[in-house]
Length: 567
Image 1 (tube, helix red, strand yellow):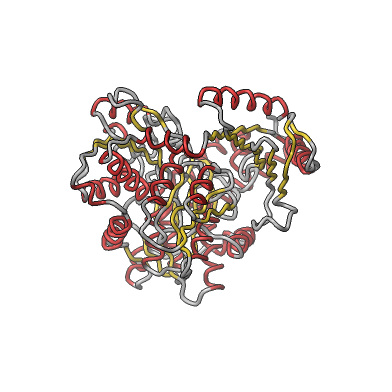
Image 2: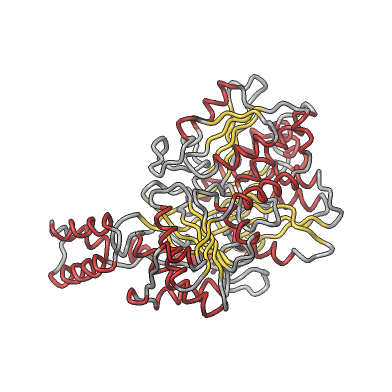
């Protein structure tokens, strides 16, 4: 692109200001070199905007510039967070964790020292930890807030910054919007600094001890239902941490129960470049390829995969008794198997409550309600599941059993308030042992669930709309869905019910730009714009009506194609 002289002068000014405030040489040099080479297109990309801090944090490409994540952007946002904490809490304390991504430890240390410089006590891990262990530590140490440096399952060039509150979940109203406003107002001149040695001497910076890890491991052991089976049933596990933070904690728990396991050696060690995968995401079959090969070689009973911050869990199961091939389960199938196992083996006599995102399969709801439990739908985002757990914690009639998202997020520990791949992996291993002891495979159990409740299938369609015209197009699309009424048709489907979460006041959900159409056939579509990208996502839900599996799969494909033609 060709920049005007005014645009060139603007980016030059922004670049020089960044160089003035950035303390880390590597990131300064990136920008200085671009200035020296008069690489104005590159400078424009780095500075045409400031990386957005949303209601749960920020995420961006690593590099120098205000449209990148780097030490300056981290300390700037942390100063804003410190301003908010000091206003809300007399003597705030914060827990900090980080994963295996490039510069995660540096960013975490910079954030910690910025908080300390503001008189805020910080507890920080001395090495990588999963996100759920940050949630646990926050509550265990009775801290007021938490930070974690991670970009979850995104490609290697990204990193991110997520904010947690005292209940252990990501920040929600009113704190989320208030922190966003603080970030908008903060100036570079406000950033406070302190030497690490001084922060430690003044008791403002402390390393989290292994006692906290051990307390987490003890909690997982306590909450498992049939752990005695590990003493009588031989189980083989194949596991990949995808170069992330899951290896040490999951290995520690498997060792605690003397469970036989093999780890994909090429993906065992932390590595922010993720050299063996394009996307370090257990949802991606390519990312799980080496784990599946290891499972075939060693005859594993279950294959596990966790993403870099170990909050998402992928599972594969043997396709047949020979264990010569394996089937990757989707996120809904994993949720169904885990909730079925938990509710059929629950020990608590109170009413079990399961909380799922509204785009997670309705088969979860049918299982729970048939077993006389309660299933609640919440908006997409595990922080909304955490809110509901908080509401249940003092109930004498109900208890939290399970939380799930179709995007491979699961939780069965009430004491943690974010999705937890580590404890959920141990629950899955126990589930395998339970069924193996009864000569039942996980595929057998899944088939039995379908035989009882019928076949369910879910599809996700995503369409991008770039630029200003794309924003207008997205608005038009959402308006067209809002114009639909009960009795009208969409893609030859009769609309039996419509929910507009932005405008309907009787949904029991916070206002959100989401439309839900339920068709007379029993099928359903959920429409929502992405909160981070110029996309609209369409979640399609299908339920069988007595057809065979093969006939149902053909019908789903036909219906999907029909809906695609209208989207």
